[in-house]
Amino acid sequence: MRSLVLLLSLAGVLCAQKYKIGRAPSAEEEKAWDISVAPSGKELPAGKGTAAEGKQVFSRRCQRCHGEAGKGGDESALVGGQGTLTSAKPLKTVGSYWPYATTLFDYIRRAMPLKEPGTLSPDQVYAVSAYILQLNGIIGEGDTMNAETLPKVKMPNRDNFIPDPRPDTGKKAKK
Ligand code: HEC
Image (cartoon, rainbow, N blue to C red):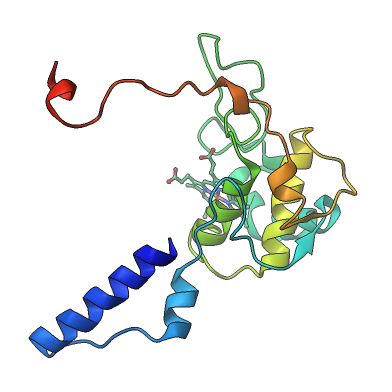
């Protein structure tokens, strides 16, 4: 990711010179933009939170769309569905489907609450992630989630993803 950021900012400098519009982003702006957290979680920021703390955040900022205890309708449920993936009506939620807990942090920080993304502090994102994991029976109520513990959480569906061996591009892909 770092090299991509470097490349993009270099491209920005070159464009700015060529077309005399815009400007290169500052290091601070790049940092604010560079928020991706990979499955390993090594990019996770400092901060921490428990499910008990996350419950408060959830009831104020998430519940109206995702329902009480995250059990919203089929479209917005964040909880439940474990054991339904091979059934005729699979319910894909964070608990039943997502392979990595670190993705939960990344997703919430970048995209939620839907109309106010980027307004939660790292502590609030850790806490609300912990709450969703606890509601799914994956961690305990008092477990603290932080940069060390979140990557260690084993999601129930982690081992059920099968890499697709078909090539995406090139001549072989056309067969
Ligand atoms: C205004 C309604 C709204 C609010 C408030 C909201 N969400 Fe969402 N959320 C959505 C919608 C709609 C989606 C589906 C978005 C999509 O698929 O592009 C979603 C998707 C999600 C997902 C991904 C679910 C999945 O399985 O793909 C997570 C996790 C999530 N929200 C967490 C939260 C958290 C945590 C909060 C509170 C901090 C929150 N949301 C607040 C509407 C909302």
